[in-house]
Structure formats: structure tokens, C-alpha cells
Length: 336
Image: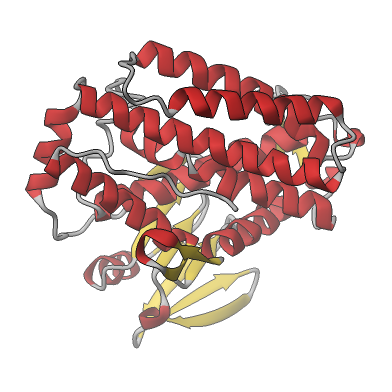
């Protein structure tokens, strides 16, 4: 997948002879539209009406993000869909099958969180007691999640997920140098650079998963774990859970460990509360997220190697087959 990120305010984009011309600071470059699969647009970028028309006509997925990385919207032209999947999705909300699906998605998320911590635990040869304890605790909770013969409520799933998330983020600090000041998850607003990266990354991942939901034939707003909370893309949040550690958390760890980003790449939020990624930091982080999304891994259900973004789509399609067949044989994608 070839992705064009338009991040600089003042950038203009025009169309001529099947090419996009991107102009910025008296410099311009041309890109062939035929080579583009995805365009991501930040605030302050101008796309001409002709560009918008050709993006729609040629089916180039185009996402618009807010300044904080959250999903703002996307271009939507005509698209092929399967009403059978949407009908099955609506029928399964608040059913035992829907709850079991929610449990499976959360189980996969916790497994991947544990896998990340386990890597660090191996690197440190088990010398960090807290890290070892959290790895063991998450293993115990994943065992509990696997008891599908036991009925479970959404509140119970949320309770277990909440406990696992709290201890996971507290233990995640052992991946980062102390001078980054990360002690656990905080948001709205993020109060330290690591949390600023996590929040921004989850926003970008949500926008990519929104596209996946539509491609797989779903209504993005009807979920099973996040259920039917108003004005929120609940299924997007459900399906991205298992990919948070795979894509975003790994991207943050990679950048900090490689030293490709520093505290100077962050700045106070405009309202004075919290910390935001600066302009250069956004470019660097988007590049790392793209590297994670295009990483090619073995996809065991199909015994072939796919990019992570392709795996996201295949997992969503698998959920669709489960809902239509009323048979939950879904297995989350797992980090190795």
C-alpha cells in the first residue's frame, strides 16, 4: 500500500494528467495517482475540487485527521457492500454470540499486551520484579477469558479489561528511560510525551480501522464490546483493540529505543493543558506507524505472509463470517 501523508499547513494539492502536484513552501513534487492507495490529510491542507473528484472516481481512500490525530472523516464514494453482513451485525448485538466475540477481542488484546511485556522481561532476564509479576498476572487473566463455557456479562469483560490495561501501562514504563516521565496511561489531555504518542497513534489506528470496517461490510458504529455508545464508532474501537499493542505500542517503543524522537519534538497544547506532538514529531511518528502497518508477518489462518494492514482487514472479514454463520470460531491475531 502506498500512502501519501499531507501534514504541513499551507500545503496545496492539484491534479493534472493523472498526477497529483503537491506544493509546499515554494517547492512542488508530483505523484502518480495510479500508485496511491491511501491519502491522509491533516488540518490546513487544501485539496482542489478536481483532486477530490479524482480521488473519489479512482477509489483512493482519503482520510482526514484532526490536529490531535483523531479521526475527522473520510471521502465516501460508491462502494460494494454485502447487506447480509450488516444485518448479521445488528442481530448479534446484545446476544451471547456478541458477548463472546467481545470477550475474544479483549482476550487477544491482553495476550498481545502480555507478549510485549514478556519481550522486555526476557531482555532484562527477569530482574525487574514488577514486570515479571504483571506478565504472570496477565497470563492468569487470559486464562480466565478463555473459559468460554462460562457466561459473561459486558460489565465483567470491561472490569477485567480495565484491570489488565492499568497494570499493563504501569509495567510498560520499563520499556522507556525514566527521564521520559512515563508512569502509566493518562489522556484527555496526555500529560507526558509517551502518552501524547500513544493517544496520537491510537487516533491514527482508529482512522485506519474505520476504513477496514467499511471495506469488510460493517456499520462502524455498532459494536460488541463498546456496544452502542452514541456518536462513537464502536465497532472500530472493538476491532482495533488487538492491534493497539501490535501497531501503536510497538511503534512508540521502536522510536524511543532508536532515539528517532526526543522530548524537544513535543510542545504544550494550545490551551496550556497537556502535551502535543510537534510538527516534526508527527512526521516521524507517522513514518514509524506506516512502517509497522506495512510490516509483513506470517498470518497463520491462511498460512501466508501479509502486511499488518492486510491482516487487519482479514481479521475483520473473519468477524463478519462468524456473525453470518452464527458460529464463533474467531481467533485474535497474536504477537510472537
